[in-house]
Amino acid sequence: MNYDSLKSILATAADRSETSPVLLIPYMWIGDFVRCHTVVRVLKDRWPNRPVDVLTTTLCAPLVDYMPGVRKGIVWDLPRGKLALDQQRALAARLRTESYGRSLVMPRTFKSTIAPFLAGIPQRTGFIGEVRFGLLNDWRRGEKALPRMIDRCAALALPANIELPMDWPEPQLVVPTQDIAAWRQANGFEGRTAVALAPGAVGPSKRWSYYVEAAKALTARGLDVWVIGGPGETEKAREIVAAAGPNARDLTGTDLRNGILGLGAADLVISNDSGLLHVSAAIGSRTLGIFGPTSAWHYAPLNPIEAVIETKTDVPCRPCHKPVCRMVHHKCMRDIPVDDVMAAAQKALDAAGLAPAP
Image 1 (tube, rainbow, N blue to C red):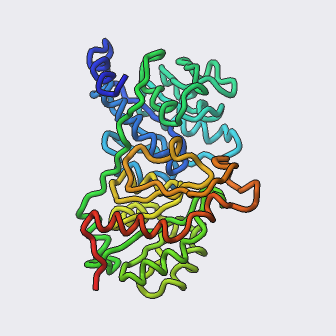
Image 2 (tube, rainbow, N blue to C red):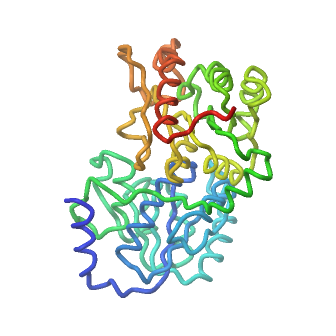
């Protein structure tokens, strides 16, 4: 089944006139959070009159402002690795004020179901996992049989046992052009072609080895280079900027909104398989994704990107999906030469008619 056929089925559903709000509880990693905007789009196709809110951390909250179809984000930072029952009760009290009719719980953890249960949300949908019987009352089975994360997440927005499509609506982050123009002006970036580099990723094995060399090659061609990432990438950004010269800028920091605007303003983005890859793709920026230990089929953005760049050599242990290279050699990333990335970058810039500024 394709998604258009599924939409036709949803358009005739008996409960289509429902108006009670829906709470979406997504994964709180940046890339997965962006990916879950597909679920918002499916919910709006199923129930066009039901407001959709999203539970979010402070880190991910700026993303909500750019997500069409989301009424608002409920910002709440629950600690990782413990139940924190007092905070769960406080969150439940906050949720009760919204009179949600349904919650969709993407993570399979026990603790992710506590607040919706304590809040008394009538329908609580999620996959069976971590002994959540009772906390959920709309249990779904068969999660492990679904090939991709997006299939597992979006399935929860649909009636149980319905045939799933292989194509889904793409996530969207709509960044106003006036915001991008203002950001460029405020940072003194007007009138020059810029390539944003996102050298970070969760785990060192997903980080391409040659961002310093790529930045030097880009600035040598007359391009500006912006290094975008969180505080964990600041040290790498300083190394890149020191090597690439005055046309390179360190834009790393704690403010994700600054990163979103930078990715939206860039003429081209080069990123590892990371959250910022999904942000850039969902914005619609020209994007190159570099994949080493992870499978692009499983983890590349649903949104089309300019190119997926992988090693051309035979690396038998790939894909391992591990954050640290167990073989130590890191060949899946070390065997992607700068020339391959530069060729893909030049092709993307040429196709867009973007020549370096003099």
